[in-house]
Length: 310
Ligand SMILES: C[S@@+](CC[C@H](N)C(=O)[O-])C[C@H]1O[C@@H](n2cnc3c(N)ncnc32)[C@H](O)[C@@H]1O
Image (cartoon, protein in one colour):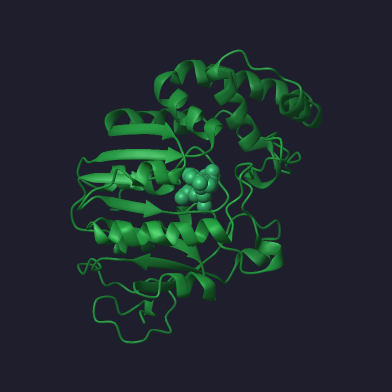
C-alpha cells in the first residue's frame, strides 16, 4: 500500500505538487543538507521530509508574509488555527464583504494575525493567487470557490508537525544570500518565478520586485557557481528556448505538466516544464511516468525523459 503523502497547507502559483513524482526520480541518493530558496508553498520540502531519511533543511523565500506564515504555523499553531476558525465563521456570513474588509482594511496586531490573514486570503482569493501591486499591497480579487475551507485544522496540524519534527531553518531573504552558504554535496532545489513563454504568461508578481530577464541571467550564473563548488542542483523553469540556452551545458529534461493558475481548466493541460540537473540522475526506479514527455531520445538512465543535453 502507498503511504499517503501530506501536501502543503497553501495553494501557490507555480506550486510543484503536480511535479513531485517526477522530481523524485531525479533526486540524489542521500540528502544531508537541503536548500529551497524559492519556497512558495514548500511542496517539494513537505514531500522530501516524508519520504527521505532525516536531513537538515534551509528554507527561504523573499516574500516576508509567506515566511512569517511558515514560522507562525510551526511556532503558534493553536493560536493560528483559532484565528482561522474565526475568519471562517465571519466569512461564511457575508463572503465578499468580509474578503475585501480583510484584504483592504483589517489591521493585524501581531505576526500570528498576519499569518492568519495570509492563509485566509490564500484560501478565499481568486484561484489561490498571490500578487501584489507596486506598493506591495495584495490585490487579488475575491475567489469563486463555493465552500473554501479557510481553517483546515487537520492539514495545518500535519504541516506544523512536519516543520517541527525536522531540522529546519526558515528565513526571509533573496535567494542569493542563501545559496552563497551552499557547499559541496548540498542538495538545492531552485524553483524561481518562471521565464515567460508568451505575453500572457508573465506571472512573476509574487513580490513587488519582479523576476525578469536580468534575474534569470544572474540565477544561471549562480547555478554555474554552485555547480563549480560541487553542490547538486535541480532547477525548474518554463519550456523556453532562452532557458535552454542559459543552461545548455547541463542535463535539460522536458516534462509534461499542468499548471494550476489558469482560470480555465482546459488551459491547464499540456504545458511543458524544464528540469535542469547538474548531477547524475537516480537510476533505481525506471517506471514510465505518463507526465514525462514520452518523445524520448535515447537516455540510458531514464528512458521516459526527453533529455536534451547539448
Ligand atoms: C514558482 S514559486 C515557487 C513555488 C514552490 N516551489 C512551490 O511548490 O510552491 C517562486 C517563488 O520565488 C519567490 N521569489 C521571487 N523572487 C525571489 C528572489 N529574488 N529570491 C527568493 N525568492 C524569490 C516568490 O515569492 C515565490 O514564492
